[in-house]
Every structure is written in structure tokens, then in C-alpha cells.
Image (cartoon, rainbow, N blue to C red; front, side, top):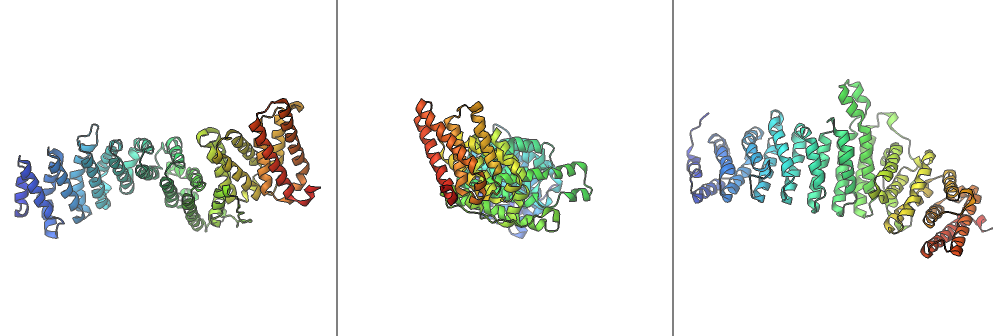
Length: 549
């Protein structure tokens, strides 16, 4: 359809085709002075093909100033249009933007203009969000373009592309699902960027893409093989602000989509088989995200841990409201109150005491699954093994009653703590985390039999056929666990195991003396064992006056 050029824009449109750069700049400057557009100017702006003329300058003008000014005018006019009119502009402008930034090498050579092109696309998509239902091809092409934009060496463009991806997840999630794998892999690579702002924006995009793609067939594999390990690495990010954002993002993910309904409703509503299987797979996803939130709660920076506590408490309140109508999802009130510690190294466990009762019930409900995940991570993720004891200490402090109803897992925990003390001799942070976890176990456990049985088994394993073969490191680990555990154990619970405790301490004292006599142990290792032995004896004597006899 052809339109008659109206006088309002006739001079500007005619000069935009001029070969003289100054004439084009003058015409563009004249157009910019007419912004913001009034009602009558808004109608003629569309009808007189001013948008098409500006898009043509963006695509083909050889002068950087003309392309930049044309893009500035077009971006400044978006706020003057409604959703339907913005959609018309989007269909004209976004394909040109894709052409300029959607392939390598970029056809737009100027970094700042690539940034502004993506920002303009993001703005027009938000403006036309309510009318995008029939524009799937356009949004899918833009999503594919963003895969390339994420590889831009300009950090601002990377961040802008991440924001645009989050926008697509909001207004056109179906376009994200088609490119889920490519977007996820590229975003995860950007999580290693040197700038904290870029990592924060990328983290937000990773979570948004994952939330929008839960129904994709390959989601489970991609989540556990790529997304979850990448998010776990963020727990150790050098920037506390990024770790805070991780807690906020994971908490929002859980609040918005995970506990929105009970799993049984999928069957009751007779959904498709594929959808039902996806919904049934959600509880495992919930647990993985809950573990991630608890990892952030175990952070040794105060405001990071407090942010995680706030997110967990909000999640607990939401879960309690959603599950209040279903008795099988509710647990009785926790029978014991948290036991804070005065030891400064128990910071994470003490912060866990700030968790609300509803959040504690939620964690208790998933205690077994969370514990299994931590034990599996201790075997496979060696680089983060030093964080696991601290996270287990947090779990023990929150889900207090579960420690007493699952005694079969206690030997595994003790072995993990012993190994952590053995292998992290030079890492003070890891040592403190292990000791804090053991103290939390001693503060909340009521049946000590599995503890002392496991220590006896470890002791017997280290001296087969009566031989004294226990290494100095192993000795330090076992005695360290026993000493630390006795530091917070209840005297009435330790009395029945007096014989075992005395025999264990006596054997290690004998082992240490013989090691010195035969020069089989290094001086520093023997000194450490002596210190641990003295601490264990001191803690033992402090348990009950009868020990003095």
C-alpha cells in the first residue's frame, strides 16, 4: 500500500536519501526535535513510512553517526505507541537488527551500536508483549541471534543480550525452548567472565532460560550435566554480590514455579503423559535447588547467608500456604529448638538458627534426599568437597529431628568428616567447616551408639590383627572427630559409652608414644595428635563429674 507523504515529514524524508552526510544528519536532527510524538504525529509517523526510512538508514547508511542517530530516534519513539503499533515496528526493525548482530563477524562494526540495537529490540518486545502470540518466527529468529550476541567481546553487549534473553523468557518462552541447548551452553561460558556485573546478568538469564525450558525433553540431562554444576560453582564466586544474586535467583525460581501445586493434581486433571512425567520429575528439581540454596546459606559472609535465610523463609511460608490443605504434605511441629553455638567458627550453623519453623519443616521433609545429594557430591566434586561439611552442618542445624530418625546415615557422615580432616590439613577454612558440622551433630543427636560404633570400626580398621598401623593424618581425623563431638555432646548420653571412649583415647595415646619412640611419625603430626588428644580428654572430663574418678 502506498501513502501520500504528509508535509510534516516531507522535508526530512527527502533529505534522508541525500548522498551528502551532513544533509542526512541535519534531517535526522530535525526528526529528533519532534520527539516525543503527539497523538496526530504518532499516526503520521507510521503512515508516512518514517519508521521504514529510519530502519533503512540503520541497515545501509555508511556513516556511523547517521546509523546511531536513526537508532536513537526510533528507540525514543517506542514509548509513544501502543502494543499493536509497536508490533508493526518490531516486524520492521528486529529483522534488520538480527542482520546487523546475528552472525559472526558482525555486520555492525561499532560495539556501542551493537549494544544499542539489542537494547532497542528488547524495548520494542516489551512494548508489544501482549501482541506477540502470532510472532513466533520473529522471536525465534531473535533468540538465535542472541546466541551470537552473547559471544561479543564487548561486556556491555553480553549483558544486554542476557537481559534480552530474560525478556524473551517472559514474553515469548516458546522461542527460548527451541534454542535451549545453545543458549544454555553460551550463557554458562559467560558465567566465567571477569566482570561481576556480567556474571550477575548471565546468572539471571541462565535461571530464566531453565525455568522456561522445564518441559523440553533434554532439560533433565542439560540441567544436571551443565546448569546445576555451573550454579554450584557460583557458590564460590569471588564476588559476594554474585552469590547474593544466586540466592535471590534460586529463591525466585522455587517460589514462582516449583511449589505452585501438588504433584497429584497433574493426574487428576488428566494431562498428557509427557506433561505428567515432567511434573512428576519436578520434586527432584526442587531438591536440587533447595540444596543450592542451603549451600549459599552456608556462606561465611554474613549478608550472603542472611539473604539465603530470607529466601528460604519466604519459600517455607509459601510452601506452608500451598500445602495447608493437604495433610500428607504437612509435618508436625519440630520437637526441638535450635541450639546456637558460642564458637565463632560455627557461623553457618548459627545463621541456620534464623530459619523459620515452616522452612525447617520443608527442609526436614526432604532431608534424606538432600543428604544423599551431599554424600554423592563428596565423591564426585573434589574441588568443592571442602564446602560439603559446612553445608551438612547447616542441614543438621535446620533439620534437627531428622538426624535422630536416620541413624543409618551417620557412619557415612563420620567417615566424610574424618576424610575431610585428613585431607584438608593445610586448609583452615575446610577444617573449621568440618569441626562446625561435628559440633552441630553433637548438639542435635540423641542416640550416640552409631557414632561410637563407627569410631570403633574405624579404629579397628586401622589396626588389623593388633598391629599399630594408623597413619598420623588418620589418627588426627578420628581423634579430632571424637574430641569435637564430645565438646557439645550431652553428658547423660555419653556415659553408657565410657569404656569405648577411654579405650579409644588410650589406644591413640599409646600409638602416638610408640610413634615417637620409633621415629615413625613426623614431629608436626605427632604434635597435632597430642593437641587433639588433650582436647578430647578435656572435653571428656567436662561432660560429667563421674569422669574425674
